[in-house]
Length: 271
Image (tube, rainbow, N blue to C red; front, side, top):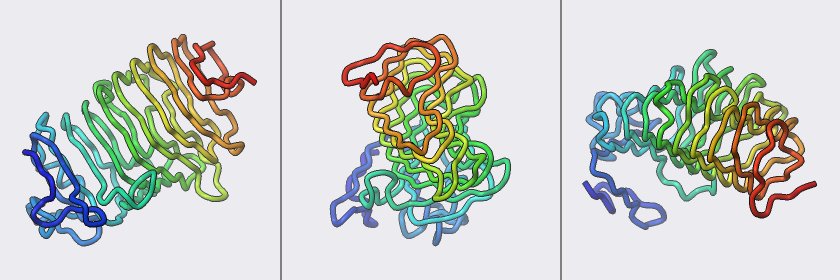
């Protein structure tokens, strides 16, 4: 299916919001939807992303269009390959769009990704638990995954932003235009945490991190690039590489990198 300007009015500032997919499209309104609906058009939106996921097919490139703001108390678990979540509209801020999802339940993530080729875009997340707001929790999950235009606010000192705390491999994936910060007055545990696993052919670019202890922590990594990563002086340890790695850091202050020596790319500031 190719969709541009849906009949029930997907638009941003009057401009049709184009969706191109060969799969099905489901609508979720986090404030006004009902899970008894079919979710096939905006006026019959579902309430939860989990219900949309239950209706989606595996490996079908299905897309969920999410609007409004809501709170979840359990993981939004993604087990279907090619499943995509897009917040709409996406124009209201540079990072994250206008859709906000909150979870403060102990021992829960917001997104628990257990499938490959998953896309999460145009969302604002407020996370107050002791795990990760977006977690790659399955060994096969982080293959050709895209996390783009996401703003994560961590409201608990034990919170992590994005990544995996296990030994999983993240391969051929993109993390782009992401902001991760502790809430005002809180220093959270970590921003981008890839410290225990293997990172291969991963591009991380245009990421802003603030008010965390560990900015970016990477384990064993090969053929991966970190480009235009910005952190302020509220980050205790900006970069840590804990394993044997072949990395390219570009537009990053070299003195901020601790651990295994990495290859410094163009515009890396050595100080």
